[in-house]
Image (tube, rainbow, N blue to C red; front, side, top):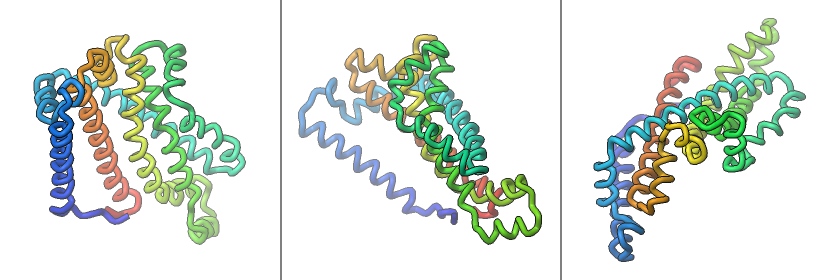
Length: 259
């Protein structure tokens, strides 16, 4: 995996795209003639975000904390499960269908059950976030661990390498790229899971995050606040994704000597 150089086009083009999207948004507002309480313009949303900046920062930080907690649990648990799956095809075939459960089950149906078991509060939100972001870690890491060059595997066995040495020195370095791919996918899902969890449990214990803010804005029919909460959620996802990408560059240097 070669590190992509940062050029002026990689910065200017996204900025121009963002400005174009904002201009199109403003044009839609002007042409449609909708009232601000239905479709607020970029200026109205920006003003709302400025006025409520302290609250939005607090909500975003709280959601970010539980999202990070759920994401960290998903990574640790996903890697451990993948290590077990990689050691035996029988174990993998027996356990993989149950791992699919975390990807296929509707999280809005599971969240109330989590609350019944663990109660209202941040713990339930973290668990929901971990559940929704677990599956990509398992699938990506397992694929990386079992995708080994047969020639290298024969070389290790020829030199009487132990199972632990094969795992740590051959399989794990080769799986890092796959793990990072799964982490990038899960990072966004962790934020989504945290917000969904907050819809059900986060606000009842005083842990007020973006999910709480969005629910209150919806009940008050405040479109500007809804847009502000959505933008903060998006920015939080971008921050988490960028952090994972930077971590990936470090791990690639450490494990495969690239970057």
